[in-house]
Length: 161
Image 1 (spheres, rainbow, N blue to C red):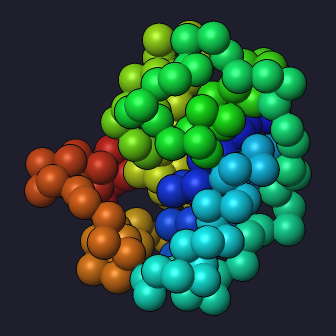
Image 2 (image 1 turned 120 degrees about the vertical axis):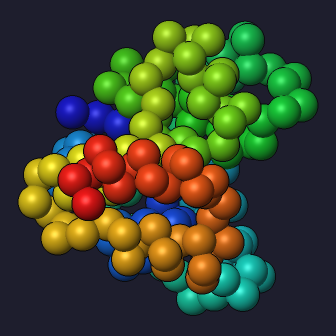
């Protein structure tokens, strides 16, 4: 299976030291150049992510072009636009993305999107991690990941915690 990742999913999984979940759950993971650039910039400049290393297993692939509905979309960052375009061009099974605008664009393009919460739930259900509550704590407290109390409860409920 091929998936395309956006910056936030890769960055936050690296922060949790759980980036290995991506190939274990999905197989081939692609990212466009803008995602790698955004990741490296945040790993240099953002204190939450200092020193993180872009995963070597992620294959960098340049989208052939930008999908017409995405061109000029001011609500999306360059990495999101390239990730969505690459997912379309490669017929990816999913695009890994957390941002609301990006997920909405994925849906409009007919793409399946999976965010970090979905990845953690799948990892728990497949026995790849013993618990996700502590990972959610780290995301919220250390990485500044916003998660409503209701969504946190629902995520833990689905994961059986």
